[in-house]
Length: 201
Image (cartoon, rainbow, N blue to C red; front, top):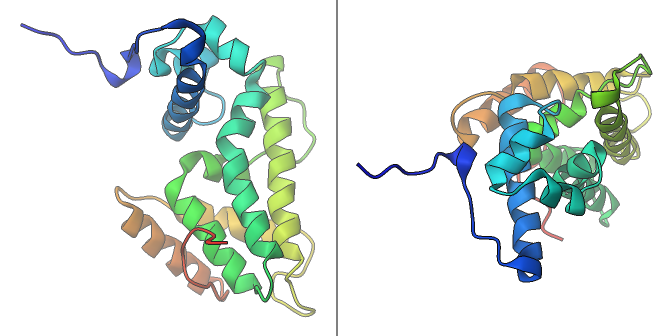
């Protein structure tokens, strides 16, 4: 009986330098999947195995755990920043873009739960969590720039606590279900959210 490789064992052919771009894309896609299943602490060996490459290939593209996290999460954060910088945008509009990314990326949810307390972390996970925390702070700056005086989330810490609460509610087997739960959470917090969609430029 023919045995087909599992997702964890995908092995695309390695045809040398010409495969570099394909290998990098495969590693990023694999990292998104692995982070969604196992969180930001997942071992890099699992990501390499999922992508079907050796760990040496992974390290040629990404020298450390923080570099992998950055490659996976930078796009999410950049779109939130672009939405916040767009002319005429509102907090509700930026929250709509943020919520779309929450429903699309479990890794992004993990980012928004990054430990920002400065507490001690072990050598294996400290770098990635420090980097995730820096990305999370960029998200907070993008949102806080649109908070009006007297907004219910204006108090110190309330904004990202609300985001973390909503992201904790984003569960379900389909993107539609995750969006429904996210919008319900925002409504219960009394926060207006615009259209849930990626930033269109």
